[in-house]
Length: 255
Image 1 (cartoon, rainbow, N blue to C red):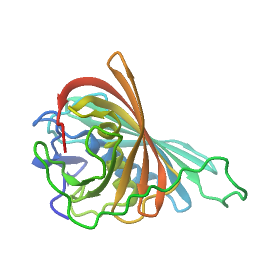
Image 2: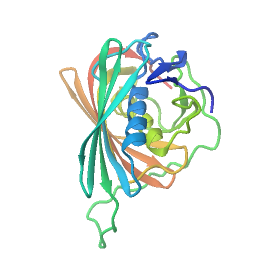
Image 3: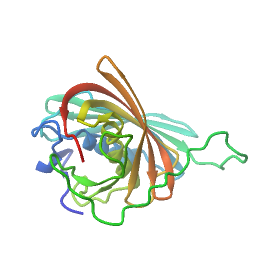
């Protein structure tokens, strides 16, 4: 992997130039805030036998390229459920927050479920991704379907998040989950919605470094949208992600 998005300096995370997002050259990419929250929550509140089952990230304020701090709070610590929150700030104030639910692993119930999400039929990519025109994502991206159609894509991180610290499966999927919004809300002439949040739910963590994202729903009216995707790894579905989004000047378009 190449250089990290952030350098850790005491209690702050200092962004590198490539941590900027597609909407403005002086704005931090929202996906990185979700990644930092996931990393902090995992570092401080993970425990063997407890599985991260939900991560909600609220992205309610754009942030310039400033150092970021992440504070976490243990909200509840029960025998089977643990809940923890994170607050993400810069010198300008709070820019995002996150909430995680960890559930105790147990024996899988027997019997046949009435509904089971099937594995998709998209094999893992066999060649490097093709880079198109316009904004280039700071991660490897393989479009399985054309941009603006019901979307399917494979993703792989090519940067570390912080210094030389390895990406854990939870941080990897938290970063990938932000792509739910462009995948579910895109149209042929570009992306006209910017997400305000995302909620990632997981039955298990991804295996390996590839994460697949498959759009499975979009509803919008009056400039407000909600979208949903199914998250995959090469072994099958791992969970879902739901986003809300606001109408915004168009970016991108085409593959």
